[in-house]
Length: 320
Length: 161
Image 1: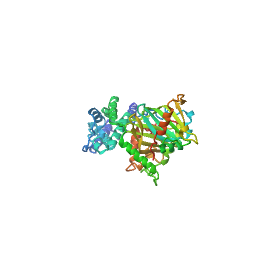
Image 2 (image 1 turned 180 degrees about the horizontal axis):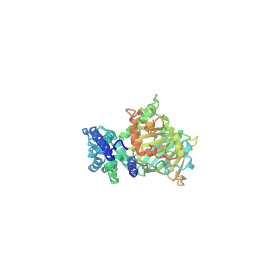
Image 3 (image 1 turned 135 degrees about the horizontal axis):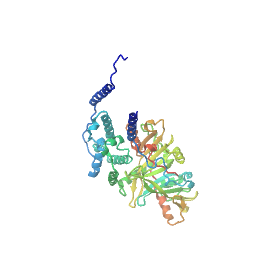
Image 4 (image 1 turned 90 degrees about the horizontal axis):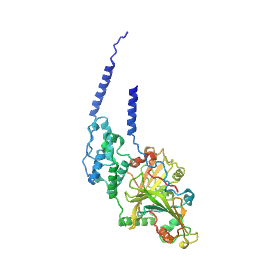
């Protein structure tokens, strides 16, 4: 014989549902609204290019974020607010005036590549906001626009003067005897010996008017020989040198001024926070370490994300 | 039971579709068409990079390699070749970089041009040999060799600090 009368199941369910609704409603108070800061200088581009960017990218990459009602419900709104914050930090078309011309074009090419590999728009966003998807024909429009913006002029006298200045520097041997060697904030020292390593590829970067040689140390070369390049073994080092392109009237291009050298150093333990790779960049003949804070490496990782399934390496090495 | 299985399935589907799912073109692959045949033993020659060039008209790209004497010759900049110099100019057809819109990378291997001077002689007796194609067969056509010799010796070294 039962002493207590059992509460019907339906009532239980109702109570649980009620509690959920109350929590859900209370959470809405903690809604984080996305505010739109003033536009300091919007990107200028042809109308058809601009239309694609506005529809696909401006919600997260401008100060003209336009949220739908479903973006404003907690907890979705928290995710949206975080995404917009991150998005604006990396790329903000409303504050385009804050970037130098070279940076602008670099950002646009990076952005085109992120779209083409599917890294952007981020999938969880695209599933809900299907209008953000950039079609193949729209990609072609963006690409044609960027190509029309780049271009080498033949016999560029400024570039030739830069190269000649550096030849004089080389003769003086002024920069090779730096002691101590320059070092990035994540602890990577400039490695002068890269010149004696084997090249694993070259690139003609017509997007930014540079050309590059990518060198690999012995561990990298052995890994290539053994076809063990995904992932690359610990101890692998790549060095990528970038020069200006200098074109003559016949379309022959030679290397101009040394722009920078970049390293990727594989060490699973030491560089665990950046997917096992230490990133470093030294700019100009003075080899100035790149990065204002140690977080600069996040920038590198971000750009390399489209090749995350290839151990974050863009270069497809060739064998000698 | 059935309901919970269904919920799990839906949740799984959402998680799967939310993950950043992209595939790098030729993931984990070497650039085979641009690689030199193993029997050419290029890496055993111990040559280092001297310069890199592009020809927009032909859509080719080249890398000039050399031993220490050749590097010095290139630095000196006159067309006298130091004794014992070994130069190798490797040329590829360009192909678009499938991993970066805005770049070209080496495609099919076109040729390797070797230039050597004897250990005790300057360039009066420099020998020139051209190997062509993916398998680097010796090119029997010897015309225009002096032009190529002059071109290779005239290339300025790329600036490396």
